[in-house]
Length: 337
Image 1 (cartoon, helix red, strand yellow):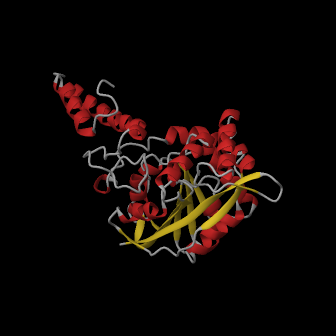
Image 2 (cartoon, rainbow, N blue to C red):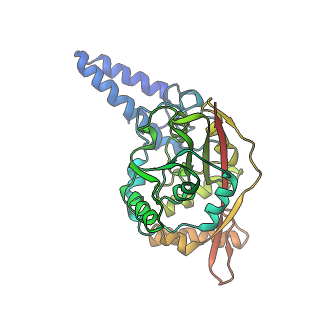
Image 3 (tube, rainbow, N blue to C red):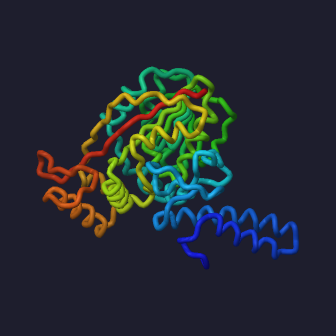
């Protein structure tokens, strides 16, 4: 707090070491060291929008193209000693959204067309209401639907039961600390979750850890425009609509999340991007977006339509005369080596 957000991780670490040294009890030193490590990581996270992102452990710059809230470089991306810092907000928002969330069949159809044939045991990380898990279930022996929000999992389980799908197991937990042994699954997936994670590198590393050698790790998400200004504006509007959003990644950065684990042979991208149309009112109704935020989002969309600042979301007026926009869906895949 005294140093302020402009100071880097090495200065913060130096101050914390000085504070610990002033404690005479070894036991107190150990406790305070642990508390400070966690506090420093959280402090860096919440100030990341105001300063250049750095890796918490070593203070090295995070590669450009990753997101503003990434707090680990490639070398430290697998550090999962601290829970994902956004998990509280995720649980708060998705507890509310569980009864409102509406899946989009064309979007999951696109994802599955990119994924192709799967088999064996699958894990769907940040599974939500189980849309991806249910799509995987027909061709897999078993699917584990893993999510941080019990309300989302309850809806997932109820939906699967109503559809007669019985090979899905449901497990509650934090994706940054997956409770599975190394090399437990043939397929490990995550859909529409990367943009909610505070430290996606750590979570993707966990996904890779629990994937069998020769198995596949699959990331499906909305991707941002490569233009930095449009990317930033997209994130601003997404956060206005849903505070659990952290930041989108670009198509390249989605693949980089796999590459930087050092344990994945990244597959060439198919070149396919699904431009998913969404009604703006429907989109905001799903998250019960406050009126002031709705007005700001709608104003920005209409400003772009009039030739003004671009949002990166390509707004348009649909055939019913209603304000709509496009989400860009992409899939990145890698083989565990």
